[in-house]
Length: 387
Image (tube, rainbow, N blue to C red; front, side, top):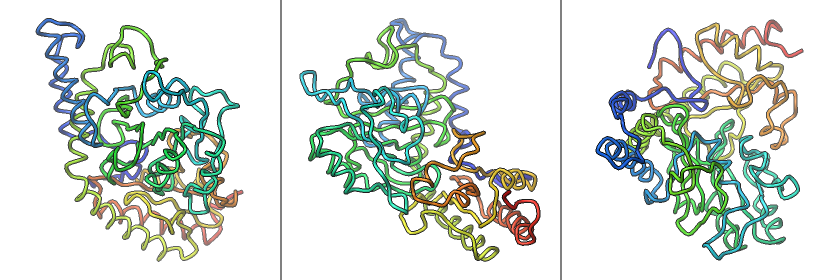
């Protein structure tokens, strides 16, 4: 995917896969409403259900467990609700525990009242503190929400161990797996998740698509969006047939090529991080001691100012970020790095580089060439020293 520019911000969004684009183009000709019973409506319904099966296969679920949403944020909002119960006559979970490094769509507590939300701390490597979680669960059953892999550091959480703790306390586990598909295994049963969030545009599908995958025993008495009863009553509104069709194809492609894509991304990550350290021995790679996504590197250098560095990279033809795309424009340090105990000055200089299935060595070399130029300026006390 080498061009005049190097796109290295795949955690923010992945370029649309060519096959997804082709299927979406075909789907534009489906005139019917997928809820209509005539032939045109049935054709649209076939496209939606085909995509539902493709998304379900990606995470080892039954298609009936998949509810389409407008993206990961909506799926998280749907998941984080006191209205879930384990069976129609089961207990309602009215307490939410979230890790301190969650995406804002989960970290703000969803539909739980603020006084029913508790943060669980993480270690210096960005891994949830299992003893703190165990202690919090002693107060009674809760809905627990954790990321499978952090969008900024790439650190992977021990979701199976977390699930065991949550289920021993008769709670429910929601896993925000948005950054996982196509990079690491995301089987809902292996993870031990009761609820699982995924997003279409993170794996090469169109923006504005996502899904919440749920355990079939769970019942939601208060849907986030009420109306005509689409999506088995869990999410009202006419389905976006075109986008959903593209999401399904992208999910299928991500699952089929995951092992080879992951191996390639891991090789590129090793090349990138070795090059960063060679150019800047004082560079710090966050979460380096933990298991991380093979495509994500969050790093800094003492004195680096992220806002200036991102612009400098851009001027050199390299697209990187200073953290979550959902935090664009914010000047405060990353809440993820703050939760890890990283000093504010270093946190303000964090740069995220994230690759994807189409990234090649030439793009990594382009990035490293840009970094060597920037780091030379840094050592000379010029343009990217923090104020």
